[in-house]
Length: 229
Length: 313
Image (cartoon, rainbow over all chains, first blue to last red; front, top):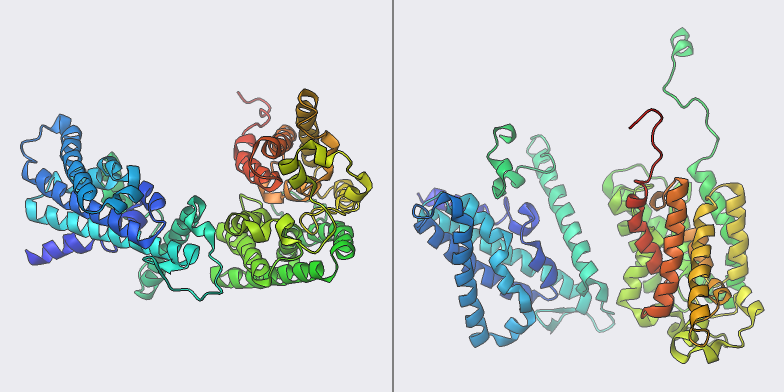
């Protein structure tokens, strides 16, 4: 049992890393990663919502009518997001202000619905919780990493602390919107390169593009169609 | 022996003899007058920027082909051409790291990242220019970078001081490049010569630059006729800033411009209209590079206009 739990938890950390492998939830990935701290804050909010929504949905999965399950998932995640929003307003108001509209938008984040539909709706409580925590942690790490890279080159700071030598002229392109797209593209490319390289070293065939990670998301009907399996 | 003699390869069987090397050499030859004029008008600093940009571009190309495992082909002068085109849009007072960084971005992000020669969806020199212009607007704006000159920047004057400040423009000065702008992009007469030479040699198709300039002139004329006290004349827009350079050398970028007649005409016209719209209504003094990036993005849509195949439905 702990083995399976660890498997569900750890798949969100590299194999099915949400923004970079599943390429889900890109809207906040591009919009709130101007600095490492906003990326981290957004990730924490997603961990909270994702873990709890996975747990609750898994608890009530047998009571939800199949035909209106999406609506039920949204009701559950929306309640949790409102809770996060109120908590942020109370205890982390500057973070709430810098995240802006993207906190309420967690409701319609593909990761929340995707994990609910693909995993929590079909599995027992503990694996669902492990899946939600792992995916949330992977999302947080990705957002923080992207935010740190963009902040480092775009402003010369890291979590608000100056780290670059004083002669460094901030490359402001990185903290603007195009910088986010360019960074995301470069990270995706280097992850694909790394995976192909590791597969070659193990003597396996190079994985195809789009790889099996697309199926793993399970949010669309492609994952269940026999032709794809 | 007998075997090769009788083997028939796939068509086409006839080759016009034009190679990438030849076309790039013609491009460089067409840019030569502008290089000379830039040297005369801006002196050694301009030559320094151009040399640094070209050498960085070639080095970045070597690095990029090494990383992507492609054969090294800097001998076709494509990287050198991109570096030179990029340096033409810089002020001659640009610091060394700005030139090197921008030139490397042109090659690595603009060209190599999309698959090398002929695969870039956006004109590579403009990609580098845009990344730098967004990051360091003060260093990239020729008007704030060139402090030790007696020239004026007509576009900035028009933008911030209105029509009265550009009433007595000397057209000869504009033609000879005695205006503030990108070090090569403002050498109007030299670029016009080079551009016409390229059109005559058939290296670029005349439809794109011609319609680009028509678009600029027509839109500027419409603005000028409606409010002559606010908006400058078409000739002013044609001779200032990056207009001619963009029309002949940037908009015609091989991999990012359409190749049929109607798409080429629409592509050029759209670019010209956008230039004047950005200059007259937008926040930037010179809209040419942004207009070119936008029409590059329009290219796949324009390419869908194609003749109906004979007998097809």
